[in-house]
Image (cartoon, rainbow, N blue to C red; front, side, top):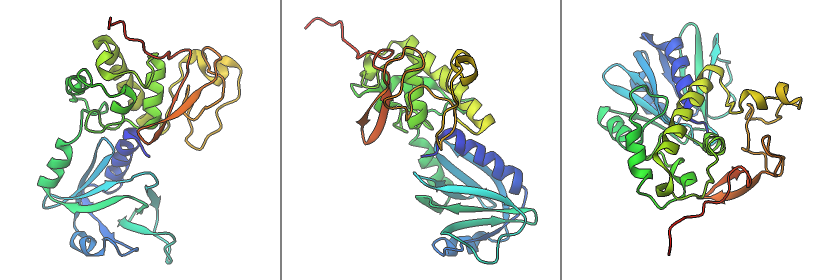
Length: 277
């Protein structure tokens, strides 16, 4: 599933391509046709993201709310669209310079300011937002018995973090994904939050997720670059059975709340409470 950095970069690209002018809006697939007709020819005011949600604003405080889900894509192209549309294009935005096609999204709805506000109110702080308040996330994590690997993926706790950033930030801070949230020290959470702020901002700049430190890059270690359709150099994500880049132990995986979780058993040892029973 696209993570928060992908949605922010997409919002920036849509803004650069369409904001401030009239846009032709259509739905070649037909599922968004009625709402597209209401927007067709009006001005696209701005595009913005919140966690994994995208909002494309049109005049009159009307927003196209998009959630890409696991396979959704919103691709931008120069020029004019082909005469025959291939694939299921739910939404197409077009101006004289180019067009953008939305495919495979789990959500594409025309909403007003109240609905948008409700969506935003249900999200935790987003590390990509300069005004985000990490205290909101810490307040929930520090009281929860749920595993930190579960909490980091809960968009109501912390918005925008997906499976890759979850696995990688836990590795970088030597925290086992099953460690209960309430056992984390405040300094550990603060360090992870600060790390996410930096890593996700870098993801916006580069368009990929790179989490390895300079001493663990392919060039520094004399190893082959990672071969994966997600791109980027990572420590544990989708590296099951491979050697940890830090200690050499075999990376493990297991299912945590419906998603694969990845960790190094040596660098991220199982948490043992010091409490006396």
